[in-house]
Length: 281
Ligand SMILES: O=C(O)CCC(=O)C(=O)O
Image 1 (cartoon, rainbow, N blue to C red):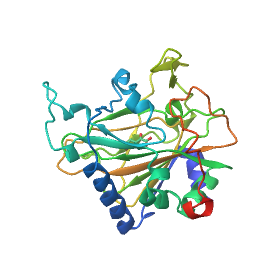
Image 2 (cartoon, rainbow, N blue to C red):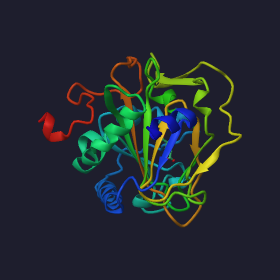
Image 3 (cartoon, protein in one colour):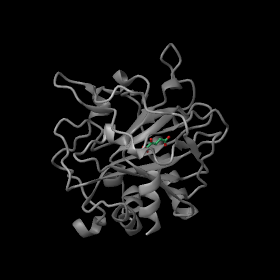
């Protein structure tokens, strides 16, 4: 199958027209409702530059919740928001796919099970979901990383399903990656630290290579399947158009999931696969 072949060669596959425009719009509308209902009494800024700030309780307890995270540049020095809340959110995470019916339905489209099977995941578990806004002017950069760093399994199995809900271009901060670079060994592992908070274990001190990365521009409705070891990044959005995307990360239940992984689930919300909601009661 060509998905499996391209994925093995490049570490990613770009599938244009995978999602109908109406299905993209339904997610955009639902994300808008979630943000409108958000009461920002707990502020957490999602920043890939300053990981210390992301290790607060709000972030660490979000593995089985739906939580909003602000852009790094959302606040003025006096702590006030520079713009309206709905234009200041970086992302919503991390259990949309289990807790919200609209996102659950989207995430459990049988075609997604077909995609993950095609790239070798035998017993899929839907580990993490993120709705990423990349709002006009303020949308932050996502620095180069391997998803395996954050969603570690032994052996590595995490696979990203990234959906362009709007056209993603160089101007509004599309993804970038170098074809074939999923052969790079893992550089770091992000985990819960014994004394609280989080830490990176450095496995290979070399920085991830940025040379040769190409823009993965993606028209609305594109699905990009990303290998967990593929270094990828996305630029800041300094344009007038948002670049909204939905990202779902799947692991294989056949691999082990370390007890000190940052993303934890409470007993009330065990990880599930692609079975639809009504099949599990
Ligand atoms: O959407 C982005 O800008 C980054 C997403 C990403 O890195 C991911 O889904 O793994």
